Image (cartoon, rainbow, N blue to C red; front, side, top):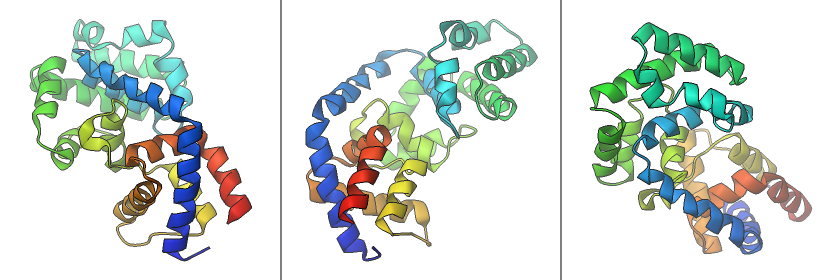
Length: 230
């Protein structure tokens, strides 16, 4: 299938069906908005992003493993000299089997320093949340090393922030669905991809955020359904 309008309608039909089927899961994911109450939320979000970039395997080893996670909390790293922080980050990410551990440790060390310069994790969070609108928050987040087009959206989408209810974090899963639909985007690929999926979400009567989370959690169901009816 190559016609974008037909592909969008087909995706919308499957999205509407899966949104109804998995409404409880979507409602559960929206409860993560409470994580914004954490004073150290921004640092935690950067750790989560590092743990999942390239492979979600690292999330289990870094975020869900309490021993590893406690070594790299902002408060515990703040007790160390700069070189010590970098060393602990590298050792911990490697132990957690985070992909590209050395590169991500260096990025996180820079991001730690950036948060310190912003006045600490609480002040940095307040600065971010005070930015008006989606684009301004994305611009703020992209100052952090390793945070690009996807993760500057995903960080805010993980906490169901209202400014990001109509955004898509275009990743390998989304691109796999696009491939199944037989569509591709050559110019401004990220933006065109996002517009296409937002169009499908609106046609389905759901939020862009909901379509994004459905694809993340239930990609295989999308692929099976699209392969049958496509």
